[in-house]
Length: 376
View 1 (cartoon, rainbow, N blue to C red):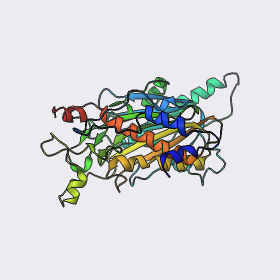
View 2: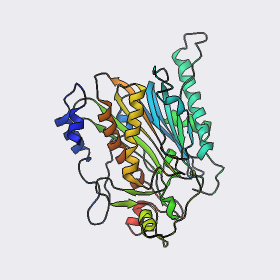
View 3: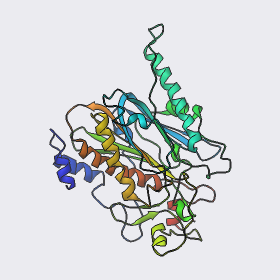
View 4: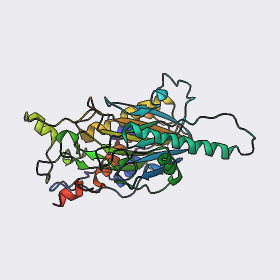
């Protein structure tokens, strides 16, 4: 099925002409990279917060490149998750599986993407504290409201090699502060929040600085919106899915150019394999369309295709790749979840690209722009 057929299948709403205009205006139907020098141009607008009911907040530690990012739901929302990575660091992802949640009784109030490896999962506790306080504020007229436990799934990246003191990791206080900073509108990208310590191209041994990116796709004039956000800390190299060209990743021995990992593997060269669990791309997609937990699990799975199209290699035995998918449910008309899954992958492709292109260098670790401009 091609893209037009997918858009035409979006249930009871006539989407094809409007959706095509939306895709063109979003730059998703045209190549994102130049043909001559692989210089990538990305949008500066469109964020996951364009999805009604979603706010985003970052905490970025100023002592070491690490932090956390909170995707905050204004109301409890249906969520699915898929974990294609072989070495994940996650929290409550099992609870989101449809076989354990067939009646949709489990709904999330936030999703946390965090640095700090498994230590960083503590940041979700701070998010729970924030949400508990929000619950008590909502029920302040009651002497003691009924017990309520907010559901806050989370996933981590390993960023302990970035900076000098790996004891500095996101804490419960970090998660709480990220919630306090959460808002709608423009989302800061690059080396912030969960992307502060991210790197790219671990298998080659000479990594490039990466970060966090976000995007959104408005489906014509229908009112349906799909958004994405991700922290790219990948074992593989980044490719432009629209052109097939290498964008960034593992660097050559002199550090001044990129040296694709797959090309070196095919040539029989030895590559440096990092320890298990030290690289991961963690993502969250969201839509305002209404779906149950089974549909959201499928949307998360389809969105994960963006990882495979953009990052090579990906989903290895030591990767921790995790993708969440949130439905805020403010759009009530019937929508085909398969089409939303396809569009979620499109949005996530752009977010992955923006995570790398918007990254800035740290001491001894150049970013994409440094290398393209000859500053590595």
